[in-house]
Image (spheres, rainbow, N blue to C red):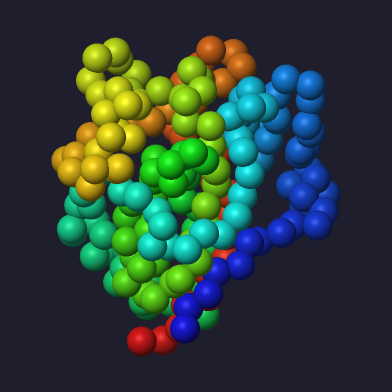
Length: 181
């Protein structure tokens, strides 16, 4: 059986020579001088594991892309470190990570690593231009099972400086032990 465990870095600041600080209105995560993101504290709702069958897709996966990821994961003998799946903390809708979820299911993972986010927060946007698809349409697709086309959304989080950043930056890294199949 395949299992996933959260990667904890006891001395994060010492390892990266950067900082992890919780401030009054923002969480600052800096990995290098060129990669950092500051976002409002009420966007991130936590990390955890959830029964993979409780996660709700809102869009289809690209079969070639999903199969390539699965083949890569199967080629690894022990473990892989992957970003957690980003989900709405109210509905379990997958916001980012459909392909990761599909591949983990195929590998027999029962509990998926997830980052819970406040999807209703105004600083999470579905596209950088208005009018393409709404959050309500995304949640409705997940709840109804009437999935949208692959890559129908391109989520971003607006940082405290007003700049859009890929939503994936809110993910936590997770160690997934991969059994040989």
